[in-house]
Length: 274
Image (cartoon, rainbow, N blue to C red):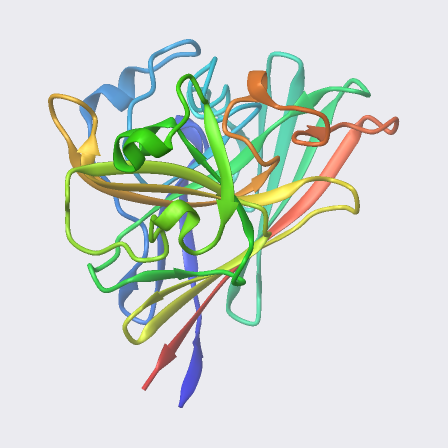
């Protein structure tokens, strides 16, 4: 028997609008990593990984690292918060629909403004957890995977395109125990399920027609960062299908239309089998 679990979310508007909790049925879904350096960041600071869910926009990798919103205070309140950045403004409205947390976003900028956005969610998962997505979904893996593929990785390649769940033999759907690896990937699908024994987390991105949408995966099993690695697993609904805006080709980033605004929704729901 499967039943819906009502979720509640908490946010820190003063520090980047970060989601600090996503909780339901006695379970906390977000992994956190307290770091005092987070309290001192200003726009332009090096990224401080505190876990939770970061609003990464207008890029994820590249410059500024993890985007420009995470290091800025947001105005408003939990129900409706806004951040103003160089060249754009992002508003997030949060509500509840039948126990699911629904975040509605509106980005305002000059027509033609290109950007990426990711709900950079780091999840607290067991070694038995897996990521479920449609079999055969196109997936792009990035250069962290090169050591795992050895000679199969072309010299100088920034990425390779394969199919889910095991592009080039890499079984990315299973998280498993720490093995000292870290792999980044983007799936070209806008809805995925995280299955962790009896618990399921559904993440669904609703984007306008023609806007590229995907799901970023950061499977860090103790392989990052160099010199002080730790385990962190990111499942990241995205607008755009690359991590670095500077590397986006035609149709790989979101573009603000002539209206000067682009809106989308993130729906997060939980279930439990009992």
